[in-house]
Length: 456
Ligand SMILES: Nc1ncnc2c1ncn2[C@@H]1O[C@H](COP(=O)(O)OP(=O)(O)OP(=O)(O)O)[C@@H](O)[C@H]1O
Picture (tube, helix red, strand yellow):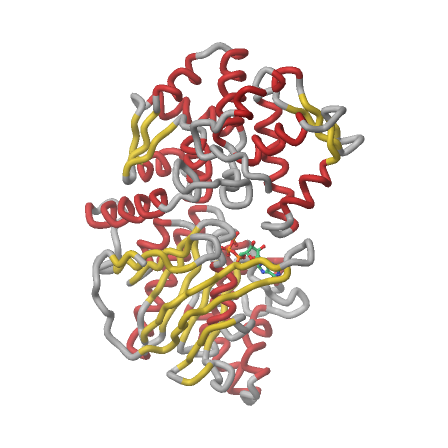
């Protein structure tokens, strides 16, 4: 694990995870290792952000910390007591609000208290207090369908606050809201939390937004790798309220960007890359062309956080595009800076047909799944194969949804490079004429991460 600064926050350890692993059954009947070797602790009164890319296991880890699901192995303790023996005082806030549609606002807020046997009058008093605290007064009798997303999430917060938890666990609570509403609610949450800080309450928030992590957290833990583990721990020593335009805020954002891009799952690295170890980043050929265009327009070099800001993207939008560019050798990354390579310029300036054939060549040599598909089609008598053939292979390393996503990305890349097509009527992948001309590349070792075609 990378520890950028080594400062232990004050306060007693409230919850700790030691060597935690989690494995789920995978779609093909095998197993999917989602977390392995996770070690962390959350202290009284601190705000910890769990930052990572989509699928890195953030929500799974949060659910383990909440005691909602058990780890496959490892030890989770709450106040030093194993979680299965402890009664953790935790409350959760979900991205989807998770309100009961048939209950009014106040009834939704009271729900958790009812389950823990708090008497009726006390329940109502505490619920009204929490509703007031989060700016919902006047809406006590409203039903969820009458509320905007921002108001619905306020109910989510009130329902959590009312339980007076020691630990508030939040799973991307702002990501279903529009940017302005999210921003507003985020700062209100922090002012409410600061008022309650003396009570020693802790927050653990899952996010894929770097800015959100820097805005909220005392410590940011980066979850990454396959299976996921904590790869870095970065304390954020910026006084609150935090100003996004301050140099210290920007420096923290920059260093997190550098860490996340530096830990890209793609790019020229380990030996024996295969479609399972080097998945296609979630970027379409069109999106990638757009990114290259923008970086060229910035003089061939740009700062990723600035670019994300400029485009109103967050990390989940931007990084897969950067990863795809880096996998294909069109871009390189140094810290938080992204640069166009010579190959990137050549692709950008080429005419349509030439840019397609350059893309085809790069995809076959550097993108393991594209290479595997072309190679398999080349080896089929008819140049066609059922898509299920690839789905079955992909399910060995991905769950159902991610396997399908990988296949559609490969189809998008293959179609753009005119390597192969997909016939939805027959559910078959069909080799194009062009890829026959790339047969030589398949026989060589290639230059990029797809050096070894590595069957799935
Ligand atoms: N109950 C489950 N059964 C099988 N697989 C699961 C289960 N829960 C999660 N997974 C898989 O575990 C992996 C990690 O999922 P998780 O939701 O924890 O990631 P995440 O980092 O929170 O992603 P996102 O940001 O997209 O929500 C994914 O591949 C997911 O499909």
